[in-house]
Image (cartoon, rainbow over all chains, first blue to last red; front, side, top):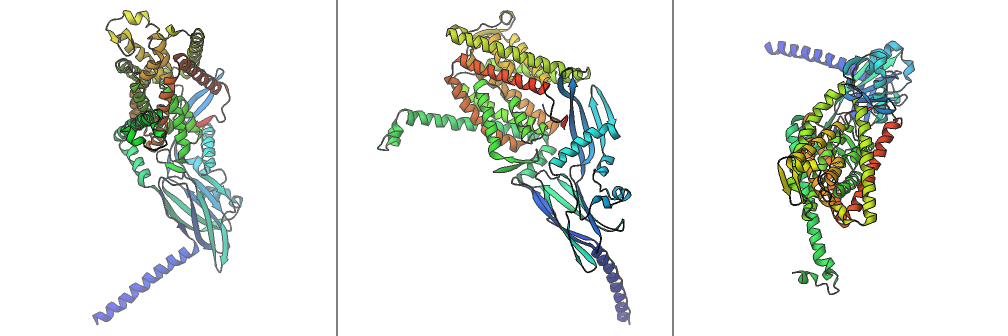
Length: 290
Length: 301
């Protein structure tokens, strides 16, 4: 009897689980994404890599995808004219700015309403980044926080530098799509430069139809230093005095070693070549030298 | 063949870095200067962030100056005793200068005055050395090798004889000169080699080849001091970049020291004066020409 009741309950639990799983599968079926690789190891031979992203969205929807790295600080300096000379006139610190902000889509960005652009943080001018940064300028003995137009000059310059390095990207119509029944599958190749942002970046794909987001899928991309790159970075950040001392000792040792090699070579040169013993046709210079 | 630099976070060619190091090392061996004035901007041009370029450059100078000093030592061209007194003054002056920079910056237009003074000083030193060496070479005047120390340097207390340099001079005066060089170098944001060599030759009367060797010895201690400071305060020393640079520069310094021995003192001073004038022209150009971009990544010299 007990066994029968238990069996009945187990079936019920299984049914509920299956229903739940079914919902997840259905949701994931609406929008999903996979990345290859999901973890990028940065070693001494790293030259950048190609990230392959693939996924599905409901049929007939446009795909807008962004890759955003963790925020950090960046220091800038500004030149200006003092009298007749060009010099550094101010320093600024831009805080809370991601090093990488990449936007790819299967349709033009102008198809998104401005409200939707703001909501999903995708527009042609990186407005989402501009809205979240804090810029502090130091110059002529005073420090001030710049907002809006005042900070625009710094931010434009920094974003332009990132764009040149291939870290801030906007590519419309770059995602390849194919309709398969009630789903659209997509593929995208993202070239990541050697200067790719380290840490865990968020990758988000939005399926947009009839002016709204009907599904979204999220993933993470981990970029981590390994081997000598990881060791040096960790040591430089965690223990400056030890790292500095090691750097000095390596330099001292190398200087002494290279001097030793040169002086030995010079002695050999004097011994064999200058005395002419090395060029004797009978090839007996070693015996002569001893 | 390329390599990813861990702290700089960029990928670059191994051979390019080695050859840059080699060129700068040659200058170190020849003239007893660190060469950061040339290497830092070159590294920035190939995409190394300014702060990393300046700090790693200092680290490689340690190796180049050790290598060059040892090569000069064998030729009997390094006065360790004199160099040590001057470098003690230099380190004291450098420390004071670093804190003085902060105070002076708050007064406004500090950089303007400093850069202008530096350009004028390079112009003065470079032209004077060029004229003096040319006339000495024309007269074939061997006497010009032995300048005399400043009268004041002789009169001050704590007089010491320095057999390698062949001069008798007040240790206090040497310390004071080292202090001034350190102070000036900190204010200018440079290593000080350009000021050290002319001071040793013309104000202390040290023969040119010995001045080069001794100047290079003082660079070792200054560069160690700055490397440690950069690693601790800014965390910007890229040891992989420095290692590549220093292999090139330590080899370059050996070659420089050997080439230098074959040159006459006057010839050495003429080439040095051309380099000083070249640096002056480059600085003046940077100050007068409109920069390609007004906002750049910060943290360099």
